[in-house]
Image 1: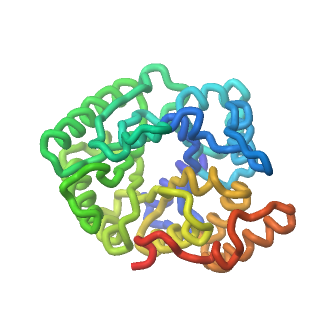
Image 2 (image 1 turned 135 degrees about the horizontal axis):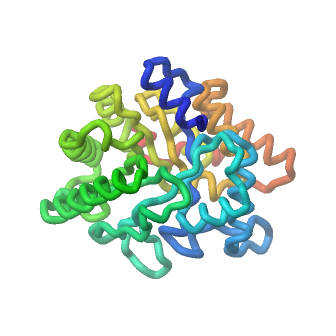
Image 3 (image 1 turned 180 degrees about the horizontal axis):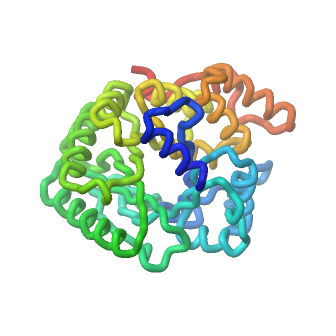
Length: 321
């Protein structure tokens, strides 16, 4: 049994502790931005990574053995499997099962400022693993939301036939009549309304939502204790943003986090992951973890992107409320 499954079992039994918090690394950015999504080689003359370098970065995270889930695109997971990267690992492999247009971050395009159109590249009957991430973006526009839910229903039927388990991601609207300050309430209502018509066997293993403040997260976490509520990371931000988000979300009831760019864009991704785990285990505060992170960068002679004073700043609006 993978570590992820063990933690879910603890949650089902009601014995959840900080050490059971699920951390996932989202290395599926090629499904969003193609070659420009896999990050840059660190150094004086930075350039975009090639796939070999990207796979090596993932393998280092796997060997570190701190995260519980490694999420990638289907093609990346197939390459990792050929290398045996996860064969004896306690880390659960997972793949992105759909790629709705609001996650497309293609250079010189503006898909993420248009209404989300459901789309799915992955073939559920030809996957390298049996767990994946499905995302839904609601808009508050009836026709669009009905279409998104129709696609979600078709996906669930196909996933059940293919024997594929899934966890569910809810993005904030990309184009909507809903005011941003109301996204948390809106997503909570739309999500729980959608799950109300689903039997237990078809429900997601856990949830991943945009963080819209502690109040809306706590509301959802308290609504149904059988739902494992998790958060997504969003943009890169400061190191304090990353660690403060984990701390605030965990205290509001989150039991999982899936971060992509906050890990990928870090000066030292492995140290960032170690600090994330220290915060969710509650052995370090976010402020202490930022200090420890910079000490590790200094010991490795890695130049930080920001001074420690700048990196201690909380800059994301939802964390300042």
